[in-house]
Length: 112
Image (cartoon, rainbow, N blue to C red):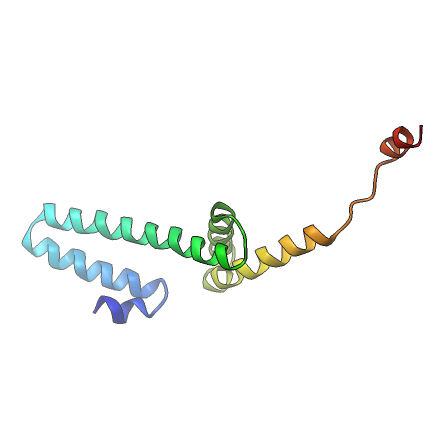
């Protein structure tokens, strides 16, 4: 059930987590709280691992990829989450290839 629900982004995880917590709640409150904490930790670990894997592929640091994923998801939802690594890589490549012109003060100091 969790695998099948996990195939649907965001909503699938919420559905499967809700079912798991409610089933655990029928057994005990402590078990339900433990299940909820465990599921939250698993999803946070998933975010970290996804950013590490994607960051390695596009040669960006994990923290930068994680920030891009979070910002993309917050700004545009699922499409933003998907596009964030692409936009991040594009910006990184552009920033590495653009030459910044020297300021007038630097030119005067260098010409002396």
